[in-house]
Amino acid sequence: DADVTQTPRNRITKTGKRIMLECSQTKGHDRMYWYRQDPGLGLRLIYYSFDVKDINKGEISDGYSVSRQAQAKFSLSLESAIPNQTALYFCATSDSNRVWNEQYFGPGTRLTVT
Amino acid sequence: AQSVTQLGSHVSVSEGALVLLRCNYSSSVPPYLFWYVQYPNQGLQLLLKYTSAATLVKGINGFEAEFKKSETSFHLTKPSAHMSDAAEYFCAVSDQGGSEKLVFGKGTKLTVNP
Image (cartoon, rainbow over all chains, first blue to last red; front, side):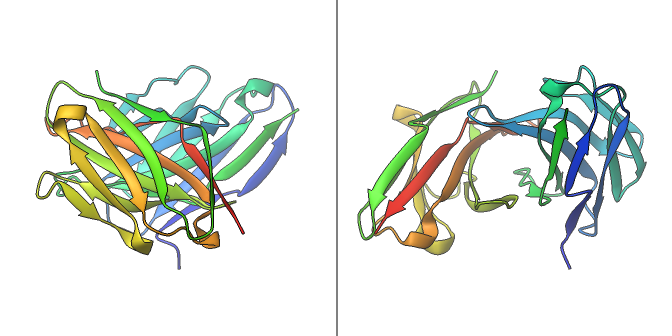
């Protein structure tokens, strides 16, 4: 079984709809991250959480919100989706006990906003 | 602030030829450096990492990278390309000062021609 899972894997939604992307991990890591990937732009950090009570904005948090429901679960919400939020979204985890912050990625969610 | 520059968004090589993917970083403190690989329709997988233990780092699938402080570079190489190496490669930097965030380059897509 995969250590980092994301649901759904693919989603098509309409402009203005609320959508939630979910991430779960069985690695026992305390840190979790949400990124979006756009062609030619690499990965950009949306939000990150170092523990259940800690939420931090990344470089592109506008239009997004997150919830850390448990150490193993980190959800990303788009309150009112817009077409330029069409992208590939990745969840990642890391262990604060590891000095060099190696991150482990989920398989991604491909989101299309029409 | 840290940054990563990957020279060449697309690199094409023949099967059996040398693979060289370039990465230059900017960091005000000693960095940790990573190469990740993304195969089509998959998440990111760690290829190798530099954590200051050795300047020449060996990774999976025959890849290696050399940390050159004087050139602020961490180029990825493989002596002989295989068709299965076709993927997108991302260089990332994290500082050793505890920011615990990764900054990614924009990626280099490697094509391997038969």
